[in-house]
Length: 393
View 1 (cartoon, rainbow, N blue to C red):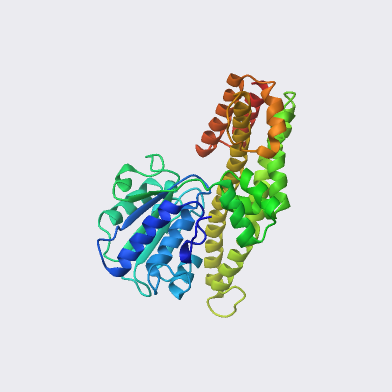
View 2: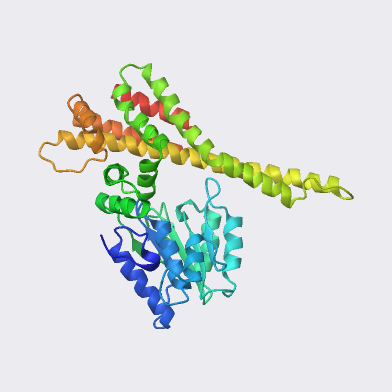
């Protein structure tokens, strides 16, 4: 395992990126060389894009040098409470222009507590066109002490516009190896080695998901229910049962994730708007509170839709990975690591029943379904079309 210290301790399998960012933070702290004011972190899901961004922000705000991990600057930047570190995350399906404009204005100020104003955009691929244009203006002429850290799956124009990409220094992250993930789960999270090794081998390189798989029985059961689908599609009628299973599980997970947060936000809003007060002006305050609550409910609904889509997309990725294992099993002599090694028997059984072309058609159907959902096709309709193809071949 690579020896990581300070703010870089949570990064797994990113030796080259850590070396480059550590050198940049050191140069910035020492005042040597010009600082790059816009960075783009790319990599597959689970590679740690937002973790790298927060770690770099902490290194830039470190009061002791280049990311000691012990000072108040490091701690608050990592925790997301530093006054000069602003984290932009989509509340719903995208990051709107109004949200980006307010952040750009805030970032134009001089730092109040740290060395830099740092803006972290966790999902830069979800910027609307207007939000991207607002960001572009700031990136083209950045204030002296402001740094923009963008995170996206890739630097492809579909994820980040060419004009923004051309003004960023790109750091490409890689998928952490299963062994490194297992070691982190064992040493940092206290998970037993056998469970950690299993979680590391089936998480697709996603450290956060490996942790959830290792700790949460419900997460494990949801994965199992998805991977049982290929063997369950024996008759056309099975399609509808599997649709209910896939979409229902995504809706349930999204609801459980957002319920507590939604209630807390509503309670905080009512308190801020003077709920339960009395006296002159109470009626007007209640009308304002109801209007603000409707706006909040609209944002929460959009966020729940995004959570449902993300949950469903993860299930589709698992499903595509299973059929990829079927193809790998059919390729005799190929030494390929399986996405789901614990389901090797199931993928081998299906490999004996399907041709390579048939397995490829099923993978294409899953990818088409993911794309359709991103284009706002109703999930149930997209999933039903996909499962029909999986059943018929």
